[in-house]
Structures are given as structure tokens and as C-alpha cells.
Amino acid sequence: MGWIDSPAASGAIVIAVETGILHCVKAKAQAIMDLIPCDVVSSQILVQTAITATRLNTDINVVHAATTTKNPVRVIEIREHMVKYAELYPWYQQMA
Image 1 (cartoon, helix red, strand yellow):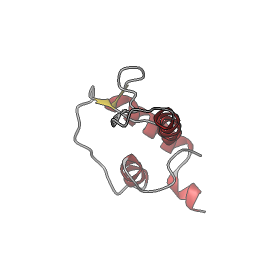
Image 2 (cartoon, one colour):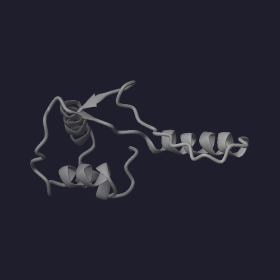
Image 3 (cartoon, rainbow, N blue to C red):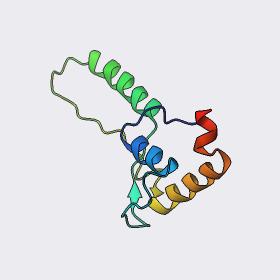
């Protein structure tokens, strides 16, 4: 059904909203959320591990996996997607 399979990070908010526990989240509608799929992060870890293994330099290289500049998503868009998803797949049906 989706990517969220545990109540961690943003998954906790989605689960709380979907189950009706959370009714309001204070946020600026146009604020950009940096949500990134776990497979993108995993891929970056593997790539950076390979790059680091081939270097003779022992300096630490800090790499950030983020989507804010290439694929920004605003709070209002997340809300719209959550509402649409909840209408298509009500939580109580998933529990059965």
C-alpha cells in the first residue's frame, strides 16, 4: 500500500493522522519538507562507501542525501496526498 511500515520519523505523524489520533499539526502550508525515500538514502550510502573504499585519502567526506532543491514538497501538498490516500484506503480496512 505504501512506504510507511513503521511508526518512525514522518511515519508516526501519518499513522496518527490516519487513525484519527492527531487532528491538527501546526505548520506553515508553504513550508518545504525534505522527505526522502529510504531506498535513495540506501543507494547513496552504497555509492559513497564504494567511493571512499577506492580513495587513498583518509579525510572524512560528509555527504547529504536530500531532495529539497530538486524535488521540493510543501506541507500543503503532503496534507492533500494524505487526505486522498485516507479516502482511498481507510485505516480500518487495513486493520482487517
